[in-house]
Length: 148
Picture 1 (tube, rainbow, N blue to C red):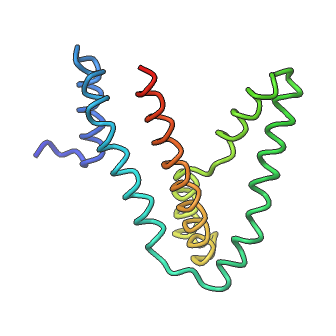
Picture 2 (cartoon, rainbow, N blue to C red):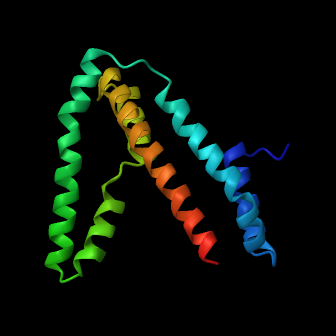
Picture 3 (cartoon, one colour):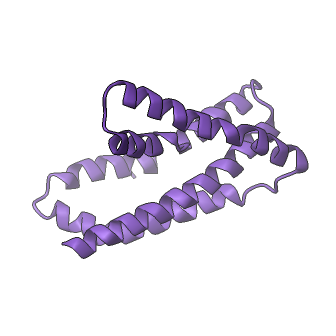
């Protein structure tokens, strides 16, 4: 109708609505829908391809790097004299993989830089970690609402 793609139109409408007086109330009301759609998005990515033995082996090889990454973040943050709890919480938040990695991998596959099977492995690993992140986020938000 206006000539914008749907996602750009949603961004524009979101920016326009964000300055409304009832924006905070709308955020609280729509939070459940957002979490549901987020969960559905990552489930659809995770279920889009059946993992093969090769992709599972690749996942097993890549998984220790997640723990190494977390340890490096923790060492770096404690090196900057942050308290251990603060460094741990920041490390855990920085350790997860985001959908941005999937987008970069999809571009790599489209340009022939990455094998298609590798991208499926990333999707499988990412969907597993993101489902856990969504569950943790939902429980954290539930605790936050109970405290209010």
